[in-house]
Image 1 (tube, helix red, strand yellow):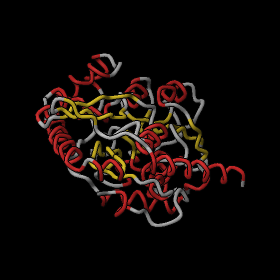
Image 2 (cartoon, helix red, strand yellow; image 1 turned 90 degrees about the horizontal axis):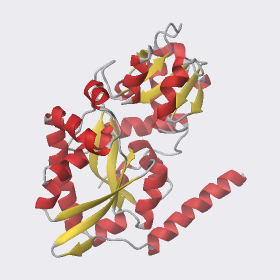
Image 3 (cartoon, rainbow, N blue to C red; image 1 turned 180 degrees about the vertical axis):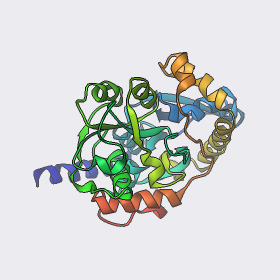
Image 4 (tube, rainbow, N blue to C red; image 1 turned 90 degrees about the vertical axis):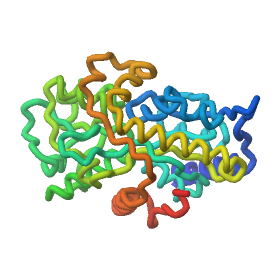
Length: 316
């Protein structure tokens, strides 16, 4: 009970901050600077390509990017006004919206490739493991980067679709960079990993047994760019310009995979050989409420949210 009260108190504090929070686009000499919460990962390549190709500059926008650890940092940052726009996975935003946080998705970021065993995320097991398919994960210890989020939700769905029982999987929280070694040393039975750690695990001898994003939806929208209702209300034209530039950048990234690999050398710490080997996600230019609903329904089934996902409120 105490934990629930603390959680509700935290939400109330965020809502109070949203009501009086500062922020807003800063304009100088005809150029609007937007504060962006991002991550130095493959998923945000289009954002950096948009800067590189001048899409934002052409519309009078300059991006001031701050890297964050994930949605747990990005969401409060947008609510408080520390960020105008930020990057997060869809699951975190569905949960946040159910809690009453006034957030809006404005652009897609990355989606599944829809290709089994050729997606940018997957479930891997140690070399020689008796686990040969998703249903064998039932009753096993599986590493995910964050509990009660997109990882365990989609992994459960893979097990369910393969005829296994997802109820007794033991999920353990582990940072993605630690997963390849943990799998190799058999500290866990399996791990859900995304690139570049998926390629690193496979290079270390691991075996891929499930493509959990693909199992959920063939074009699952995994992460998006979002803002606050307050920012949209106060800066409608700026938000529209950002969305236009971001959509152009997404299209460019999707049709120029070699440019994605090039830009990764400028804002990540991956070495060139690894960059050339990793699997790239899809970079859709349009928002996708269909796959978000599929994900939201699974979240409700697993108890992450109590009600139907409020997608009409989350997506502008």
